[in-house]
Image (tube, rainbow, N blue to C red):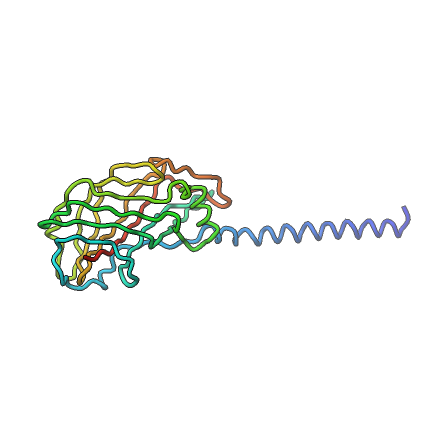
Length: 235
């Protein structure tokens, strides 16, 4: 091999080594970006903001309908789960304002009630994660809605009318992913002006509803999580 050929070979080796280094550096730099893309904290449906509650201006009895009017304590529903990485656990949430429903209260007793959540419009802070959650976890094309239906009457006569937040225990059927399970959970409730606001976090194990976790790029979904609900109703 001539001196010129040897120098050319060395240059090729150097170019290959530099190229490999650049590729590795780019991959390393992209890992945090991908992690943030899949693993932000999301958008959680919070509980009742007590600072935004005023004294009641209407009786609690009546036929109440869920309203989607924007503003404080507006209607929203979604979920919160932990995303699990080796050595790390991060909480993430998604929510939607696509919620409908009703409540019937007679003589201070909740006699019927149901809410329906549009699972096809759950959003967090990542479009990529949202698409994965809808298509690969909740299969919303097949199961577009989740519901909670009250199955036992509940005394709500003691709900405060002075602008403070009370609580009631509700028993009902929760349906997710086409599977129904009975639940009993305490909810915060407030009468504010001509509105009735109900909010709560329902603990669930997703496996009880046939929700399996796929192999995601950045994380696996914990089995235990919450359904987060806040509904604003008007007569």
